Length: 194
Image (cartoon, rainbow, N blue to C red; front, side, top):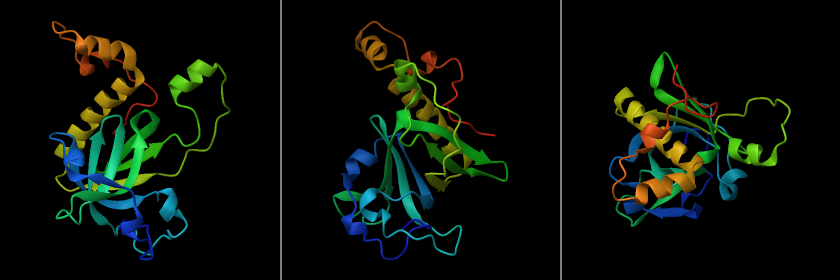
């Protein structure tokens, strides 16, 4: 279990996803889950432990328009326990510290509208305190995995922001448009890496 979860959290009670789904080629990364915000069923049992860098082996995957973190144990079973699952469109930022470039800190919009939702509503919200990190993951294969993850996340984020035009471009047999070509300017919600 992640380092911020108590031993009382029952992994068997967590939602599950098929291994085949979370191990899509090029869209999953091995990591150590140091901090993961608990899902609703387990949230009441979660208590931070004394060890800041304790954690469990996990797999971080991009599954469609969702970012999914699953417990890497129990691979002999047909499904994996989901530690956390977030919509990619709700990514606020992903950061890495200079002294630990293989550790990513994830922040998500929580109960606040995404930029697309704010644009549609037309109203501006007052500036709020930055949210607490939702996940802190140490990528086991180092910064090379961090870089490939960031590229995949950017592509997936761009796809989640422009679903209608992009689907039309991808369905056209003669089209050479790629997601990466559509991401030419930085947005305030794009991932960061100092």
